[in-house]
Length: 268
Image (cartoon, helix red, strand yellow):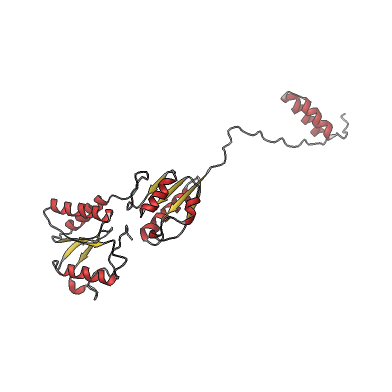
């Protein structure tokens, strides 16, 4: 007959530590449980392969909030960050495109930059950081900053294909002078029309005087130009949508189908 007697817990643990083999440890635990004492649960060993904490990536977003296309870029960045397993820190300040880099950017330290480079000052500021950067505008290009944008020539050709499929035979293009994206679209647009045996009338606003001229003046200039075109003319406004002018009599009183001509920025 086994007589139950109290067991000194400290003594039991010391005895268990002195036993080197797993069988001895198991025997000590069994005896302790028989005497009414339960050894504390052992801590699981730390794995050498336990994944290290994710490194945080800090990205500066130099993208304005005053244009629809810029806001779409910001939504795309937000969606990527939300769906990514990485740890992202985003530094962004709402601003106008013409404002240049924010004040905090001069002292900023991070891992990469996404920017809409509108002027040489911003382009140089981004390039000086030496960090991985990408330009998503293409107005002030810099040799050290890669460019990721849509294919402007393809947009011009696609507009021609769309209008020809619908049977139009009179064409026009309204763009922005001294603006790379608009001029690339115009060249592709007119070249595709020439290849199909059609001519094209082009009208370009001057980006350098746009801000100093009231919108109504631009509309009047465009209305005068449109008045000399055939009454049923199809064309592109240099943006992402083809436009069709049906009848001059259906235009607004200001004279132009678009009350405010397009500005000097991408998809503004």
